[in-house]
Length: 211
Image 1 (tube, rainbow, N blue to C red):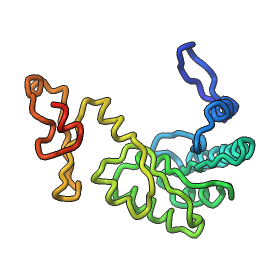
Image 2: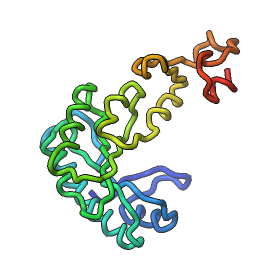
Image 3: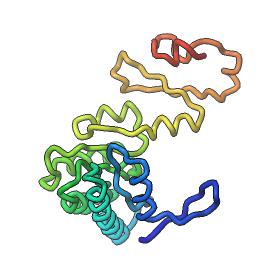
Image 4: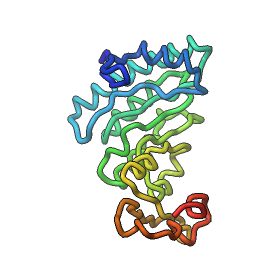
């Protein structure tokens, strides 16, 4: 509720909303996404409810920080796990000054069908204000992005970061609208002496310049 512990070059340090406020004042970004209560899925309804309650407390901070920084735009984080009622409660209670919504836990749900169903229902609900920017956070593959396009405006780069950390290269198939993707394990020894392009049919910078 009050702080989390983070590791930095000086060791362990408490990180709370005041620390976040200090960072915003120093860097003055173009916008910021509100803090949220990270969690694992599945979890009990009681835990989901508490998570949304915390989110709404953080929402009050975001609105206050935004006002203190000359109405710096902010995006409201949306949780609720697999519970539509809690997701709608979260959205219906966001600040009137919010510029958008960021779904921060959908990627944790087990199936694509479940994720699509929830985001479709949530964004179509009466509680989702028109004109709000919609961001989907977390790793989403290109083949999944196609399904989200009617409901989402922006994706983050978590998927790319996740692939990179595993030594994988993404091979898109433009002929079928990237609905089928393949991954090349660059750490596999069979590629150590292979100096061909990652994908010979691709003309992106990586495939033209690197092997």
